[in-house]
Amino acid sequence: MLIAMFGAVESGIIYAIMALGVYLTFRILDFPDLTVDGSFVTGGAVAAISIINGVPPAIATIFAIGAGFLAGCITGLLHTKGKINALLAGILMMTALYSINLRIMDTPTLSLLNETTIFTQLQTILGNTGVDQALNGLLTAMGADRLPSTWAFLLVMLVITITIKLVTDFYLKTEIGLALRAIGDNKRMIRSLSANTDNLTIIGVGISNGLVALAGALIAQLGGFADVGMGIGMIVIGLASVIIGEALFGTKTVARATIAVIGGAIIYRMIVTVALRFDFVETGDMKLMTALIVIAALITPKIVHARKEKQRRLQKRAQLHQHAKGA
Image (tube, one colour):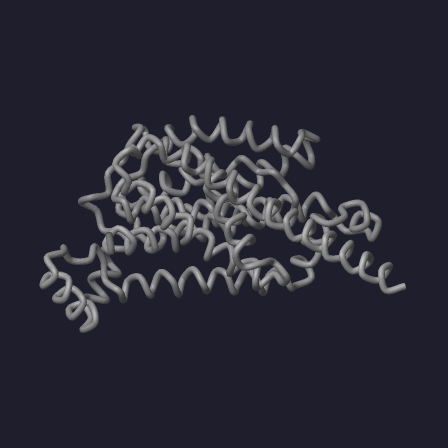
């Protein structure tokens, strides 16, 4: 169980990057972008085919970010310049990306098991630390298997994700970032101030899908393969991470909201890992569990709020009754 939870945290940190991208479109821009399911695969496909063709993993990952950014920009163009509904523009781009991803990979699945990836390079550089050796020795004494990765490697991925979070926070406080936030709140007001809302929307959706593609590239390298179907349901996973994080940690500030998204992604992966440990749950039930988790995350805060509101009204009524008796 410990090893499974370790793996959940490990993958959750990477999925948090994708969740940050979803947060930018759904919460900042108020743009229901379904391109995510396609751009996630695009990131994995571009990174995988680049690595197979001898491109260094770091450069291949940058290529993946660029491909995701381009896909997001096209979605933004379809919406702003083509005057297509935001939801439909995302669906159209997601559909188109399925064929594009197949063209990129030239096969439904690409294996990276025998290739050098960012993670194999990290493991070579970091090696096993003293903490890892001590912990793995303890696990062996307890009859458990060794950890699937090093603590140092996990720390590096956490630092990368937190760095992206801090850069996102800084960007959203710049002039362009404030304009993006304002577009999500009141697009007409920003347009009345002569701001080019179309270009800002295109840039925002592009950045969002660039982050999603980065997560796809990292997941492909972590898992050792890129698959044309690996992006199915990614938008729901991203939304689950955002909603769970906001419900647990709050959204008073942008910095708090982004750290909540990261926490939500990790907690989501842990919930799924625990659920899969039950005998009656099959691997194919994962999408159903994702939907149930999102439903629970959406309904629970409203139920809690309704109960608090009911208690408040009862207390107010009791106070008025006591005041009337006193009079």
